[in-house]
Amino acid sequence: MENFTPWSALAGGALLGLSAVILLLFRGRIAGISGILSGLFTPHKEDTSWRVLFLVGMMLGAAILLPMGFSIAKVPQGSTLLYVLAGLLVGIGTKLGNGCTSGHGICGMGRFSVRSVVATVVFMGVAILVVLLREQLGWF
Amino acid sequence: MNRVIALLAGILFGMGMVVSQMVDPAKVMGFLNISGNWDPSLAFVMGGALLVFSPCYHLFIKPRQTAISGEVLKVPTTTAIDKPLIIGASLFGLGWGLAGICPGPALTALVTGQQEILLFLAAMAGGQLLVIGWSKLRVRAMQRASS
Image (cartoon, rainbow over all chains, first blue to last red; front, side, top):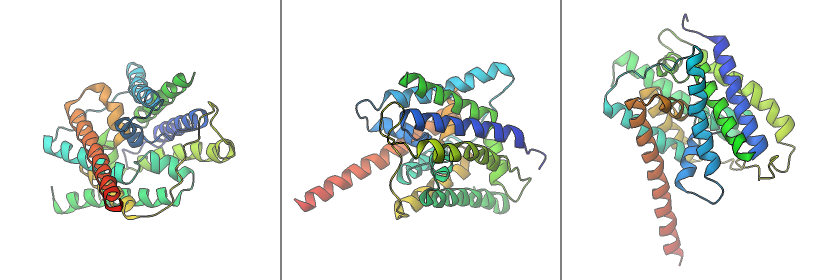
């Protein structure tokens, strides 16, 4: 467990929680990233600008921290097929299941939504299984 | 003011992603790989977020009729544990396990302009559009059947 970083994990998590509180309390919106993005594809009046601003803000937040000693690790170089397949599955899955790690994992579970607890257990369980199969059996 | 709030919430989210290192797929894989050198950090990220969000939601948001802006509190009302939820969560887990990237980190890391992130995001948007298109077709087919 030498890679374990409990304090930065807790601090970063607290920032995510604070972001979700602010967006819901002030604007009435759930800080679920997959939903914020997919909402742009079925545009309604008065519903686009907050989404764009939030997504731009995410990149801005990262850009603000980069000169302050923080870094964004490079994504491991993998095959094009791997990233396209993974992205496609994440896109279909989050739209079909109505949420990802932030929407279900933070906002939904935080509201004690059983639906979100089930979703989180399922996607985390499947992801752990995928990694286990790869590590143990050398699949894909 | 409303726009500043949306931007500010996004900035805090992006900072959270960087501080917690969830933008690093290797860090996420360290959590998902329970048979290796397990790194519980991701659970602490979720825990930190829940420790802030959950009490604030129950104390300050849930009792309210509307958001401070006057807008509707768009809190999901669906409670069904149905097939789309289970299939969707499973497919998402499959994709997440393959690359170690989920939507929040991907959109934050877009700022680096890495090709792998661009590919992932384009495919992810494509996947969401596929589901949107498919459900529109289904609605139309059902309308035709009932008319």
